[in-house]
Image 1 (tube, rainbow, N blue to C red):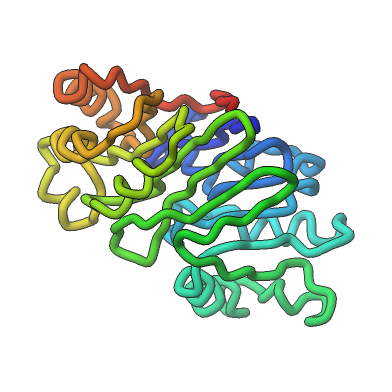
Image 2: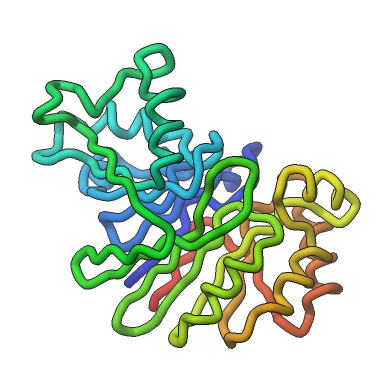
Length: 255
């Protein structure tokens, strides 16, 4: 399994800052932030599956445009996966004909450009020998993380989360964990904002990682533009023993 980072920033502002979007092999997308816009039309057209962590704009911004761009180039609907709550939000607030057409009904309800597929936390889906499982997280809107597993190993992506014991309990059950991508959206000076918005800052992440019982490579994602250097300095101070690395745009992880 190969994971390519299309976007891992907590915001925009510069040619290297793209919001959350991870491409698995060539046909699975985890979230659809602004990083997806850098793909060619040909690359977009072969993506068959999109797994959404949650419906905040930085994680779904390009999904409506993507469906519109490649719908007529595909022989089957684009499958969009999320919890029932996530799908309900997408239907009510994005694909509602007011913000964007409902492509689950276009060109016809029988043969649409897009289909929604509900998933449940803890449910394992298998796509071509690759296993994807939604994990519990704690955010201000309904949200999940994802566990990706191949025959060679596993990767976990937290998505957006604050303090969440259930997430770490799920991670600790993964015996072949090789990579952990975990958010840290704010610097320590904005700890109160992190708490209110159910994100993490370095001091909070340090506490959360004490719950981790697996040895793995740790990558930091969702850093806010303008605070990247400060936050990574604080992470180095708080989490030096874990040797975390900042996730990079266009980075490739294999497992």
